[in-house]
Image 1 (tube, rainbow, N blue to C red):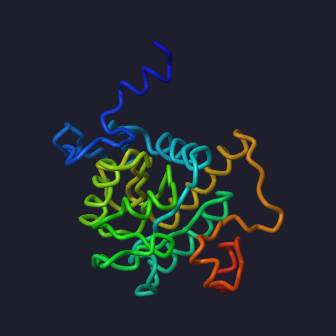
Image 2: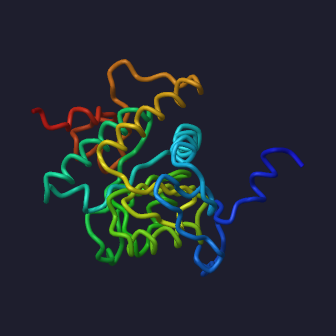
Image 3: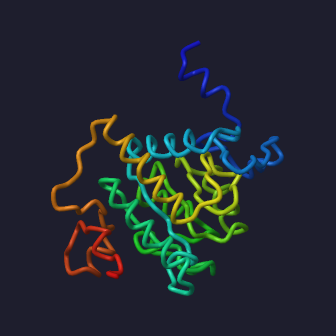
Length: 233
């Protein structure tokens, strides 16, 4: 058995599609790790290993996307504003990343614009439409994040990553105890992985690729620098 095959066989939570109504991670025996550890495909792992694997997947899978939730989108508290600013700095390290917001949790009927947003009640629609194969969920209230993550695993081939204060066991990769200081550490590890992979950064700093709807809302701009959104001290 090859090393890759061995690692695949050791995974409890793996990339889907897992089919209709798959068992939850808890039903499959996944447990919550102690502080300093995260989850890699359902198994406990040191957090630096978790961050490194998250970086590798975001750099190598197709159409990497960040899904920021309401906690990061709305300037409701100075602590969360600082976290959102740190997320923009992370986005500046991922060439070709898309940012598609989850502004609230109400179902979008009769249909959602998948280039405008993602909704936890039908997240697969946004992932299918944009052909997303790896996504970072961040700033989403835990119960809605777990709902969305399980649905994504059921019906798509998207590898899910969740960065949060708590662990999200239904994500393939999950990091806990996230604050601004830890995000700075995450960014440093992403830079190391990016250099190891030989991925070049755009000279103009425009790492974020806009969706069609976002292009129309931004007067034809197709790429933007996330650092342009930082609040100047």
